[in-house]
Image (cartoon, rainbow, N blue to C red):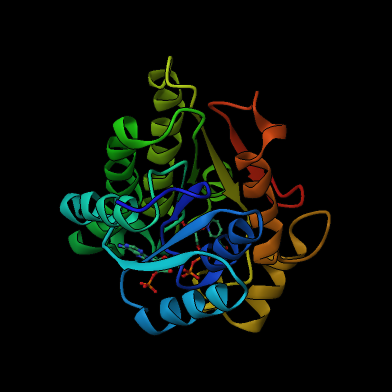
Length: 246
Ligand code: NAP
């Protein structure tokens, strides 16, 4: 077991997109960061190198959040290499836009396994393993409030994340741990951009009154607030971060 010199954060799905920016932001805030990924080993390693070169403590851990054994190992390896965990950011996610009638059983399972079961797996470990004073941030989506056609299964799996968040916050009574979720609107990452025409992207960009897509930093700054001292009294909440979209 390593000697703990700084607070420790696990960010799931941190090889790319919003998670990678959150990992960098948390490192800049002084956290030692475990960068979880499922497939993108090259990107995760490059991020570790970048953070270490900047003087931060960071490791990359391959683990499928949908798999309970992988998640247990994710916590084990983080504890061994960085120390006991203070912050868990449940950011890993996927998106396939398709009418409900065209969803395969596999795609339904994939959505629920990564979003609902993945969040469940990490929360179950966090319940006993997070340090007192810890913070948990789950990832929902503003689509839950929009009920967009093509998003039924994605939205349903993210609605489950919101329910897990609100109940788990109450179950952490006595542990001094806050549990919140963020629910972004469209963010300019692969997850949103992939498979959309320029026209579709512009339509989404014009939807919020602020008339643009979010950048990952718009989301990571809110996560920074939620892990920091100024949010101590924010608990059990779903924060929609979407420029006023819904
Ligand atoms: P992204 O750019 O596609 O990145 C997704 C990340 O999740 C990758 O690092 C990926 O790792 C990881 N991941 C996927 N499946 C995983 C699994 N089973 N186990 C561990 N990691 C896994 O997506 P993003 O836009 O940053 O999205 C991040 C979160 O924000 C998601 O929960 C998403 O639902 C939510 N969100 C995004 C938007 C948006 O418009 N972008 C809007 C609302 C909510 P690998 O590459 O290694 O597979």
